[in-house]
Each structure stands twice: as C-alpha cells, then as structure tokens.
Image (cartoon, rainbow, N blue to C red):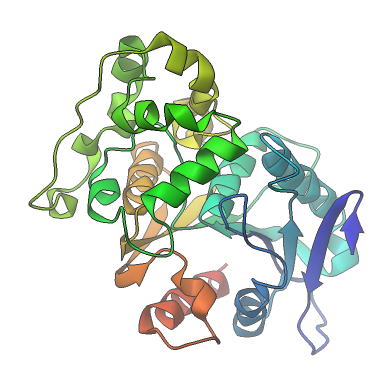
Length: 314
C-alpha cells in the first residue's frame, strides 16, 4: 500500500466494530539506516491487538539513497494524507495518536510540532515517544558517557548515522562530540534545554564528567549548522509551539545512550504545561521493544504493555 511514493502498511483488528476506532500512526526507528515495515511487524501487531486500534505504519525513505530532510518530510506528508482520510479507515478523528521509537520518536516530535495551528485536519490526541532522539548537539550528556558502548545503539554507530543522514563529513565527528561546532551564543541560548543541569541527579553516574566544549571551530560549525534546525532538534522549538502540543507518553531506558534525550524532552514538555506520562525501564536498553516475540527480555513486554494500556485510556 502506498501514499504516493511513500510505502505504508495498515493494520486493522479482525473483528468488525459498530463504532470508529482509535487510530495510531507509527514511525519506526533504525537511525535512517535500518528498520522496515517487516522488522516492526510484531510491535505494530501487538499494539493493534492489545488496544483494538487501527494502525498505520510508515516506511519513510532512508539511507543510502535519501538524506535529510526526506525522512521527516515523508512522515509528515503520509500523516497529513491519513488524517484527511480517517473515516475511510474507520478511525475516530478525535482519537488519533502518533508514535515512534528512536529516530521515529524524533519524527513524532517534529510532526506534532509541525501540525500545531492546523485547522484543516483533525487535531492529534496524544504522542508516544519511545526512547526518542530529540537533538544532535550535546553529545556529552551522562547517558552518552555511560552507555556509549551498549547495544543496540553505540556512540560510534549513532555518529555514523548522524553524519551520513545529515551529510556531514565524518572527519568532523570529534568536533561534534566535543562541542567544537557550537558557537558560544547558541549554547548560551539553548543550554537551558540541552544541558545536563536539567537532569535529575540520580541520572548522573559517579564517573560523569560535566560538559566542557572544545574551542569553537567555525569550519565545523558551517559544515554541521543544520543540527540546530528544529527538524533535527525538536527540543529547540519555541515555547509557543511546545505549549500547544498534545499530551505525551515518554518511554526511557536506563541502559540507552538516548536516555537523557527522552528525559530532557519530558522536562521541556512539562515546563510548558503539557501533560506527560513517563515510564522508565530500569532494565531497558535501546531497541529492546523490537525483541518482542523474537526472544524474551522482560523490559520488552513491560514497555509494550505500558504503551497498550496508555492507548486504552484514549
């Protein structure tokens, strides 16, 4: 099934319903390199079965053939198309949720922000961000230090994905990691949202080293300045936008390099009055929900049950 050039997959409960069902739009993870409709089939089927919802899974175009901003644009366009056709798919326009994991969680943040103020389509009811990435600026957060070599998302693989998708030459990797590409005035403006000072003390491990930026490198900044665009760093959106976002479920995992991205975005939403439900998997790691039905990790099923139960209340 396709929406124009974008491949999608529609999941519907087997039993007929006399009323419109809840709708879920799902953007998968994979760092713009991995992930597919098939790879996320178990996860999507579980949500449909447990929550009695209609789910649309979106296969955005990714590397190596497509770079920024193709993926976010695909997610946005497919979402608009679906929102304009809800009743055709048996979906209640007042109960549509966008969800995604990892880079798909970034798409959730981007799409919900981009739809603020739209009056020609139904408003989103909620957003579900599963260990999301919401910035590519501060790579010195505690979770980046603690979990740099923890599967399935190591620091080296994450930087490979970032550089390839954003077309940043890999020679600038160290400049990105050390903050040499961040002008002082930009850090001063955004540290209130990006700094580890915003994290609860319990998430700062004993070996944690506070942020220390290398001397500013203008060439590195010019090569990578699009990391500061809201498409790539939705945590930087204006307060006026953030305050109008729908309620959220934010899932974080202790053994995940992106743990602190989720924590920072949770705080960003809460500071602007957006209701947030938070679930932190103490035994969880990045990508663990993908193992549902493949092998047994308690964190996988626990997270998926939390999401299903959250959906049932919508």
